[in-house]
Image (cartoon, rainbow, N blue to C red):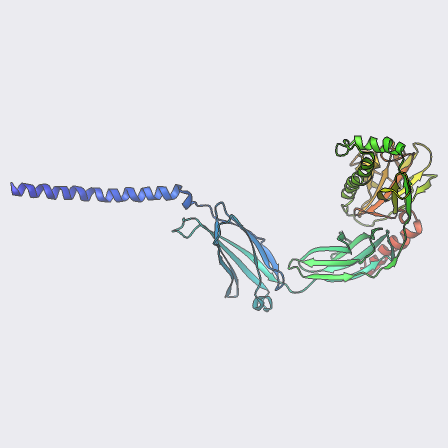
Length: 465
């Protein structure tokens, strides 16, 4: 009997030893299934957002972005060239974040090295437990060019002078293998975008001196991909012009008539009860909204091929000028000392006979025909190269948006829509969204001296006839 008991004991041991591997296998499979489906073991690698070609120097950092669906754990940046390798950035992030905007400063020994071409490798890991608890890995390689040389800028030709409130033409050369941006800054944040002109590296632009800006400092600014900057100040002969000031009585008839009519046409001002506040809202707030639209629609620079030429503008034949450009208007109610609002008049008011024809003096594309508040029915024309004309207060518009018009074509008829008391046209000219003195562009001699002759001079210098 004792022998039989020993047989049973050994049988149980053998049976138990058979189930142990199965149990271990099930545990491993279960752990694998858990790891595969658990959010802690998610398998989506981070994304590295960086250009394939990067220019940098010791002043401007290398910038890139890392994103992840859960959290970013670490980032490393390595530079390599000709068997040499440098780790220039290595960081473990303690706080969880799905996005990291990273800036890496180029070490001086690399920025000032004779080696200019490098391979940049970015390695990012997330906080997942996937990959044996190391996290998902993403790698991005890019070509890095060390560039400490700023762009080269040279003036080719420019208008001999510029009037305060007027226009000028600038033609210049800007060279850099990695040129990123070029513009003319005249101060107070006012910038003009040039177009490429006839030969590589040659640029041309019209600029304007805003009539209400005293400090005018035109400067060509060229920036390359490494953010090396060259500034070339322009020395134009500046002609200062003093613009008029006028006082205008705001009568009850005017406020209860045109002003109220305009206020009721716009929900932003329709419920203003106080007549003085209503006048101020229309004359200042509505005017700003209307002029913001005009600036937006005239900010684009349409390039041209070959030669850009313009004829003097004469939109209204037999016209009489009834209001000047740049006038600062003070509106008073009751006593002349009781000023209730101010505004600037940024065009010429021209009058002839009622509903007279308005002409486009040059070829153009119609960019707007909408009713624009105080300006009424207002066709706007793009003459290319950033030059625009507008015709306010029209009784009717005879062209459509997007239509091409030819020099001498009738585009509209004079009227008194908008904030106008008599039949006339508000004629305005803009350069890249900046109102300019229309009289210059209405004179043949001015156009020849400041525009045509400058193009011809530049063509001879760059050898393009």
